[in-house]
Image 1 (cartoon, rainbow, N blue to C red):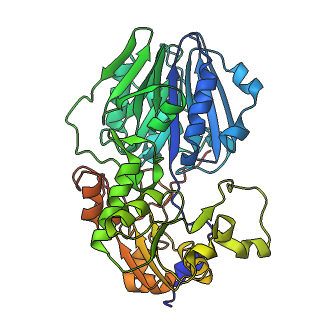
Image 2 (cartoon, one colour):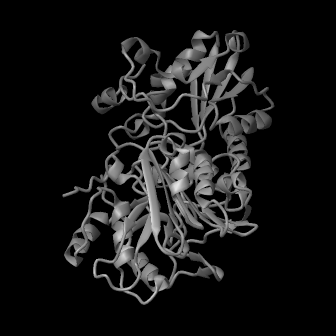
Length: 484
């Protein structure tokens, strides 16, 4: 087996090799309804996008209420918390940190107000994405008189919008969008309105749904389904939608739109398979990726299995195209999540066994194709391959729906640094040897983009190609804004 360079020896200690979604946001406008409860269940549907903290803000036309807490959505709210969140408008957020430390001050929604006291500019804001010029904006906003208590780029966005020049919210939003660089899908709450805002490149998803007596805005359409809302459409890149007593108003981007750059990893991994992206069911897109993967990397085998649950659809597609039976070879413990109990050495050595358990009676004596969504640091894949081999598989052929990840993400995904990315440091043959597979095949960039109906000019695939839609530093890693 190939040995890893120095940085990967450190990375091998990382137990969780999965990509971490940025965040999930939801907004509800529903007069006469318990909107806090609506927001709670909307966040519950988006729990996969962030597990560090959760929060809900509401408004009743006169004031804004807010509750945030650390932990999962189910841990962050008691019934009494929901009861205190009055009003007919709500926004909610579930967070995985991409900028700022994991602490309650960075939990969202973030509250902000106009420091001059002019106008009615109090707001609450929830953010999915990453703003790459937040540090410079933070310094400028300090000169305006803004103070900061958190260390995230979200607080910078909230302060910028609350203090932006303009006679009304559309003018303020327009100013904010001219100043921000990076990725942001926002739900914003004022005392009497709900706003949904998507950056001009549309990097992170945001969609609109209709309730019988109101509206829902959310990161994914699965949240609309959970609330009984009808999916209408995605928020367009650069678009702002405002919902108030007059209904929904769409405000297009002022100026020439840049090329769209929605994150292609939403299709590979981040979004739930039952969500619609660009109006197409994500499950079907993943099946198409699996079929394309089978065309590009065929191999004789007895069965195809997928790493549950994110690679299941792709594994089904691979099996269908290859004419090889699909089977479940790994069972996932669906109740494994973050824990505050530090495992001792005995349990740490179990590693991935805490998440997956093989089925020896299914795998024994078989040539097995394992389909996975991606290989990032390479800390989990060798354990999966070893587990399947110990269960009796005679051959193991790894097939991956994401092309080799060689570049970090700067737009809202905690992917890893270049030093930690396996494909940035090893050749494909070396990766094959390192993970212990008999063969390895990645889906090509062209194959991936054709599977989702796009090209490099219509998607952000920078983690594979290094071609970022917005100029960034070669190494930004995780932004750390100092709170002083």
